[in-house]
Length: 385
Image (spheres, rainbow, N blue to C red):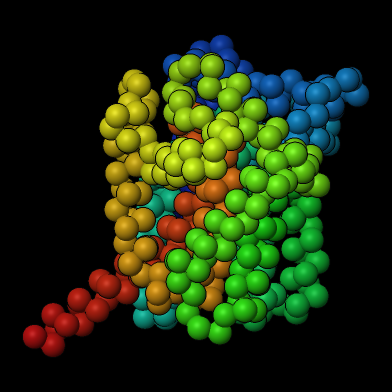
């Protein structure tokens, strides 16, 4: 069993390494220094990170947007190189962490007799997830590390508060502190989302001894969002340094850029209009674009390759929520809070496809667990017949 899982991890890693290396050499031969290619459209954040990392490594003034600049700069400085390939190899480590951590979390919730099948399906999902593939291999973006640290923090939290891990709690705690610092360094609102979701889970677990329903979770989050919208719109969150109003103004400004924008405004004094549009934004970020939101080839491709599949998976998961274990409930809450947060600030399908990976990773882990159990039961029943 362990050999087979190792083979899966190696196969997954090979796919990502091959794609990243292929894109690197294609970019070099095209004169783009091993970073992104213009055929994919838009700007390349990787070019910005590379320039700022070079400035950091050379002791020149640089623009700090995240800890990614420091880390890339230190790598260039330590190896005394300007090679983009070595930075791609660093990002490749995050891809390995993503698959290992996903399988470790899956192992926590799966039965022994179905884990192998669930692991197989999960590896295939992650190896063929278009947005995850592109954002992890196209350039030297920070996103793959955000996904990795988010999963790592999730796994460590489970070990500490839900299911006993192999390592002593003090080691898990120290690792969790380190991972949360890194997660906040890479993206502050990813840290904010994780902390809020963890608090929601602990609170629900504290007040409810029975199975938690979707209505209870939704009710609690509805009250929380309503209170902030009505009473604390100008309160600045300590982690991100932004208020509810700041985020809404940022979203409104981005709507004027055109392109693959959703065109959903949340700037409404009427809370009912706000909630109607907010729900629309959540669904669009979660499983969009919808057919009427198609603006070009990229949004059409996004709907065909991801949106339709995610739609059916989400229906499947809603039907299973009543039998969720504590770990699965925690994973579900992490995903829900993430989508609630990004749906406030994001109005772009391209950005949404990149951001929603954080929320879909835990959902896919839950899905493959139940889907593999369903296949296993059908096989048993067929043998009995």
